[in-house]
Image (cartoon, rainbow, N blue to C red; front, side, top):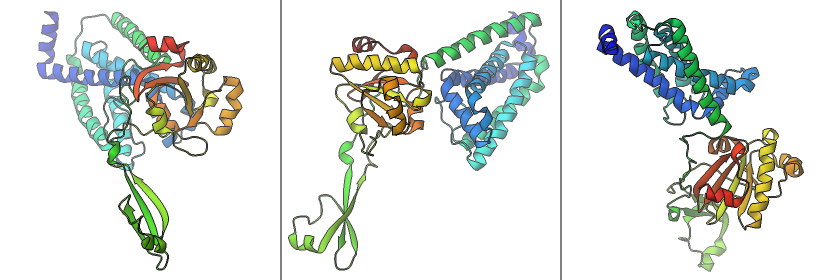
Length: 376
């Protein structure tokens, strides 16, 4: 009955926009809080763009602070806990975000602001327009802040915010110390990463006329390769492969130190394939790498497949081979792609015939191949 009187007092329209605004903040903080490392990477991008390099080492702390503040502001608005102060906080933070996203929209300084994590992707212009709408709503809520009456002592409201905030920070750190409870990215468990429509791959060959120097491109094998007279006048120059019609599920390219492409061989392996991912071996968790070395010995004993994919230089791998027990094959890939695949350094992925069966943070690495298979 009390709640009904409160809503009537503040007005139904005002109550609706207040709750909607709070829910937007709750949703935004949740999809970022479930993946704090992803949010830290976005913060790092902004720090790099604005030249604040000294703060890059604090990107995770800044990300956690932003996520926690967003959540508490949304919670406070919905339940009218310190709501007047919350309405001011929401308005100020939206003004800040609107200014930042304006520069993104105009200059494309950061390709993805990560406002809704990886759950919802918006263009920079779309994000800016979204913030304009929210800032209008926030202004209305702030203007009517005196309507938000909650007959609860301020000291109790402060305690509620402190307790709720504490639980949410625990939630953030749980996702940081393990893997996101909900994975919004491409390499989620259960997804088939094999490229489909492989038959649509087209190969083109380029030949040059020995007399005129003119080049001509043919789609293989539709060229007169069996005409000896023609072949005597033309010489092979180059070839290209058109994969535009192939449905590729990822952007990862796995290369060996000589530049040979092993992507399909590793991802499409019909057997169990363990991929240890470390975008930076210099900063990889040592105990995690030691666990991986022990797991590899068991995987090898049972005939499984185990490889390391890293963005570190080949000489860095050599430096750590004895330290981390890297006796398994190692390959190289782009660091941004590896960070996208798994939020752990190192992290472990188990594939089977191209399907992501399981992913582990280094804190949760299985000890044996049997244990890994049982966790599926």
